[in-house]
Image (cartoon, rainbow, N blue to C red; front, side, top):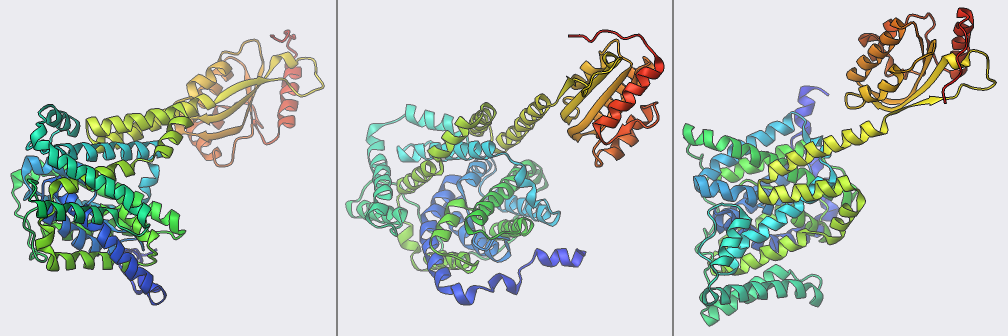
Length: 551
């Protein structure tokens, strides 16, 4: 594909809306439904990040709209997410909410570049146990982050480790201050659990927030509230750039970019699996990067694809990106029409919404499946979850992938082996001076030396026949080890014959020197019988005395 063609594939086109004529009713209904569901989450994630409820709402509107238009998925819904909040809270605590604009721009540019460089399919390299451990860790952090608000603590942790902050808040618990916030959280949780049982279409989070807010206002309960919200989008502006601050934000912004890419692609992949329609991962990265840039210009936060909201979108019948666009418009209307009402929502109610959301993020069935699959998978799952909570979620993914690679290489190395086989019948004089070895599995840097040691140590033979047809992978290290093996045997006067080198591996064996190390003419064979026949001819020609076969 030409450069112009690649560029066009990353941009919106009329084909994105080809189905709208048939599906617009479904898309409108889905968009309104997702907008209602997204409202409390946008407010809660904005508050939890430290940027404020307005920033969360702006992000849902601006990033949700831009990602819907420019993204690579037809049904993905984007906005502020719990995983992103986990990363943003320490940044806001350390550098202030004003730094988010610059973080948005840097991270957005990095994600756009990743899409332009066609890195979208890299998410497929993340193992399933790592993804599930990552999800469990994020859910745990989101829950722990709400503990101070849920018990009325004034100490929100200033971006510190969520588990430490939650423990400190519980240690300083004052029953008098905690009673009403805890009651609000429990009420929200109960309504969110019971509402779908009353009617499947009831948005439990909205119903819960409305009930708790009305009771709080009418009863004059001593609950902290969201506070004033803007009645529309602020004017876009470029964030101030300070070179000193820029240096401090480079690494956090790269972390945000990595998370935005990973979470968005995972969400889009889940949506594609549910709909049976593919998505363009590179365009998805470009769309998400532009969404974060736009969000930063309007005072919002970095955004990602939101798995929960995307799932609601699908369940509500969405078929095109029009649904996600309508979702953003609905939220914008709420800002303009009901901002004063929304401002009176208690923070404890939002904490309750996020706590229930965090619990729902974890699938007990999936966790059991991972833990019961293999010990390696269980180790990856637990390790990723623990590192996510204790250290950092990007470190957790990186370490999880590294450990998965080591475990995979270890398993691959163990699967590689060498076996000495009996020569085909009928037995002939001199057969004891022929050694037939079958090498199988992967002959690579992690296994080559161990596998070939047994062949190299063979004694009292004149000919060694190597069966390589079952070597399914051969790297440069494996080929070099094979060259050294052949060279060593030939120097000892042992003739080496090779049977079954795969055509794809032949060029590498020639370049590294395996073929050149073979001294006998006609050393390569496609079938075993001709190779054994040639070995017997060599033994008979040398007329060497027979040595009894070892047992």
